[in-house]
Amino acid sequence: LEQALPPTGVHSEVNSLYRQPLAKFLSRYAADTVDFFLARLAQPAFFFRFLDMIRMPKEGENIRKELAKSANKIVAAAFTWPRIGAGVHPAADAQAMDGLSGIGGGSDLAAYNGLKLV
Image 1 (tube, rainbow, N blue to C red):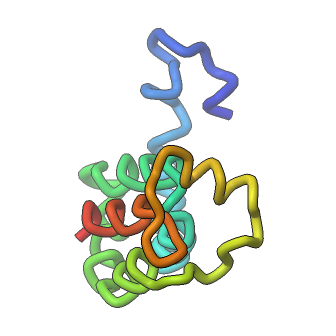
Image 2: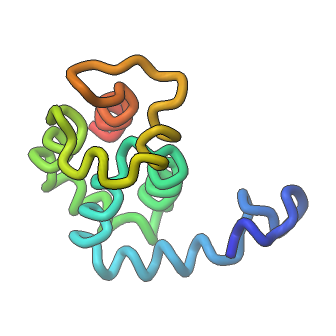
Image 3: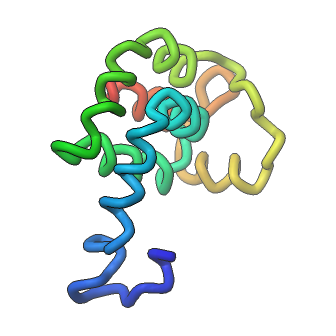
């Protein structure tokens, strides 16, 4: 829905009307939300959306609490080689790794984003 909004202005993707209700919904299912976004750690669009959600003071509180309890999940998602599910979506893998050097058969982006979360 956000991609249909004009690129600039009051209701752009940056200032989406959907962001707060989405964060509120995801906060109800914090454990599933953390699992969903950690599985997509190397995909910038998902990672930055996740950061937006956890930075919201009220709506992101439950997600932050769940994330704080999930250190092992963060480490597994960020630093396990080869990645679980690698090669399942070759186009998405190629897009996520565009311009990145590979280490141990995966992209550096997941490791970098994992460190940001920690």
